[in-house]
Length: 81
Figure 1 (cartoon, one colour):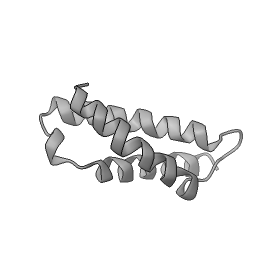
Figure 2 (cartoon, one colour; figure 1 turned 30 degrees about the horizontal axis):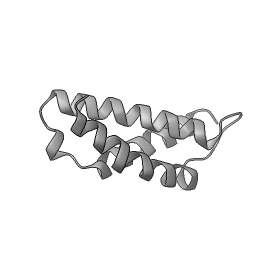
Figure 3 (cartoon, helix red, strand yellow; figure 1 turned 45 degrees about the vertical axis):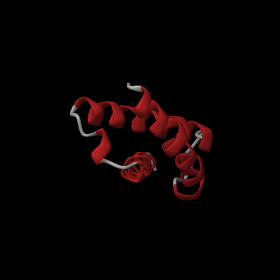
């Protein structure tokens, strides 16, 4: 991951995930919001790495990664109900 991608993750995506996940993703079983936030950060980092390897880092904004990560976390928690 390049320094630019790391900056996007650290300064733009992680704060948004920390505020969005507790309000929009329900905890199931022994999960807590911190665990879900870590999962979201991991998903976002993988998405950024994939987009960067395709040369499209400047074309996709952090809001899209946030929406994608929250949507996936919602789907994962709902599938365990």
